[in-house]
Amino acid sequence: MFHYKTAEEFLTEAESLHLHIPFSDRVSSLAEPVSLGAKTLPNRIVIQPMEGCDSSSDGSPAELTIRRYDRFARSGAGLIWFEACAVLPEGRANPRQSWITEKNLDSFKALTGRIREEAVKAGNPAPLIIMQATHSGRYSKPEGVPAPMIAYNNPLFEKDNPIDKSRIVTDDYLRALTEKFGEAARLAEKAGFDGVDIKACHRYLNSELLSAYEREGDYGGSFENRTRLLREGIMAAKAATGSDFLVTSRMNVYDGFPYPYGFGVTKEGGLVPDLTEGKKLVGILHKELGVKLLDITIGNPYVNPHVNRPADVQAYELTEDPLVGLERIIRCVGEVQKEYPDLCVIGSGLSYPRQFAGNVAAGAVEEGCFKAAGFGRMAFAYPEFAGKLLRGEPLDPAKCCITCGKCSLLMRYGSTAGCVVRDRYYTDLFREVSKGK
Image 1 (cartoon, rainbow, N blue to C red):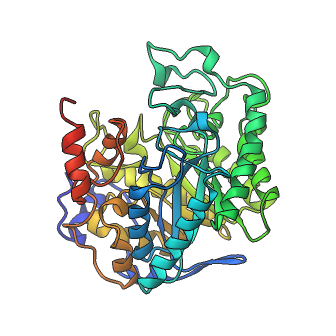
Image 2: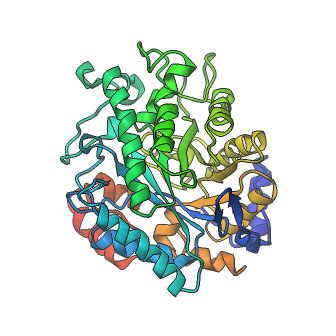
């Protein structure tokens, strides 16, 4: 369990495990801006796309959505990465997932304007806002019951209950999906977002295709085929938007599953990260397609959450100390950043160190592991954390995320998501929805 009262205790434990965890006492370094060409990131703190599952049935922001983004806006974070927004109704992960259309465009336009206004009223610069465009793939549940759309059957996930092969998406479906990413980007720009993320992480459809080694056709087998939807989705988004609009991706470079079911590992077997293909893909996106910003992550929050969300307790027996997971994700992101030093890479998985999260993030920035630090669970629990770090102040351990996973558990219960420990609304909600579970 996380028991560290001082930075010395935290670092001594890491050293005893033969781990190097970056650490800096100068957390105010996170306040430095980052140039992204025509746009500038006002500081290096990013609020990651954490789904609240609280949009209206038509996909537009609802009361709890607005409540959450008001808090994020006032936090001072330089980039707010808006949560997964479906590009097709059948690709929604739940009936309340965000979904942008021509019909609800004005509601998104009002929200982006409100975020900037709330930031300025709080005395902060207006943040950049990026919309995450997604197809949930095997996690699709648009009517509240599983309706998976998969790239291929995966026995590691499906075990003794394989998904019917009729649920494998066709090449024709994927070709048409490319256009939907372009359309989502066009709508995002009209709605006032600064950029769009063609989501390719955590085993949603675009991410799953990266490991479709044994799939036949134009979207499986070769590296070119497996990366086709991501590459062409980004090209479609760029073609549909202006030159100053940021087109990016939150992308897995390592899944944490053995070949042929995991991206970022060797064919020889095992779970040791091999980022050869991931770095090759990043190079294509950056050097050939002009992507200036990438949000790099690893693992799958539904099957091996210890890989991308280190925590003291998981739904299964842990075989490693959470500090090992923290070191792994920083190291994987760092490999990408050091390969492409002029690319702005965002780091992930930084909530676990609690009151030392800013020190770890600042240390990783100073060591060149990434240029901006992404926080997800911490933003749910302690939205004002960003302002504290930007002022060079220590985080209050009594307000930090404790990585209990109950925000995700609310999602699994089919409810809206938030911090059960630090936010009274979600404390009461969890008590209600967990009865009899």
